[in-house]
Amino acid sequence: MLAAVSDEPEQARRRALLDPSPHPDLVWLSPGGAGHTVAEVRDRLVHVAPLSPFEGSRRVFVVERAELLGEESQNAMLKTLEEPPPHACLLLLAVDRDSVLPTVASRCQWVALDPLPERAVRERLDPGLPESTATALARLSGGDPSKALFLAGDQGGAVRAAVEGMLAGAVEGDLAASPWLALLAVAEQAGEATGAEVEAAFEAEAEEGVRHSKSEVEPAIKRAARRARTSVLEIGLLLAAAWARDWAVVAADSPDLAFNLDRLDLLSSQAARIPIPASTEAVALIEETRLRLRLNVSEELALEALCFRLERLLNGALAA
Image (cartoon, rainbow, N blue to C red; front, side, top):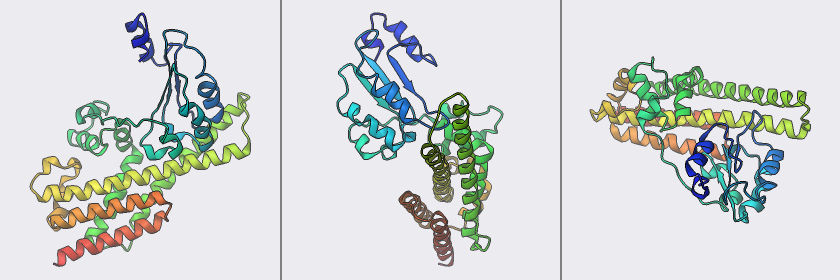
């Protein structure tokens, strides 16, 4: 975009692609430890957007991870989004349109980006990983390298183990140990760690002379912790749906199409006992629960109910 309006397009493209970019007409807003701040949005976007470009006829403003914008920050942008200066192009990068306020989404044109292919995701992972594990992580990531790297780490491994324990309990008809609590515990730890990181970021800014009010700091810490917690639960339920889907794939004698290629032995032993229709219904139950969690229902009760519904479904199918 900047290259198209430049007298030296190749040089403009090269400068725009550098990180950080020295191009004077590219403003890239990345969230810090405390996320996007209202002051940053106003000082670097709202107040700057009306200014004329330094080169060419365009200025480009990119808001990375727009889902981390607080409500006040999003509201601060509304006027600029609704009536942008003719030379300004505003790009908001977000996980999905539901992650920003409806008032913001309604003022934007939605452009869905395709996920990266499996091979491209695998190239971002540790080359020392076993082939089956690297392929499994790439498939489970849905084309998102950051998710694949998360799943390859200790916390991601803990999420996978917790999900496998939940579904194993449902298959075996043994939920006495409340296996859903393991997933909740991983989510809680993720939330606490993220909250601590945000608090440390605020403290570092305070040491540099940047002052924040208590009414700004505490909600930001809580929002970040809550976001991390719900993100882990979201990933956990997506992994659960992928596992149930793999029951059907393995039962249909197509194990090479399974997502969890590094868990084929366990999948095969479970899939041998589960009819394909029950597997597909299990996927639907898990997806229903995932959507319910977005409605601020009790996470513990929702996961507990899911496990018992799966236990009745799967063991009912076995009895039949």
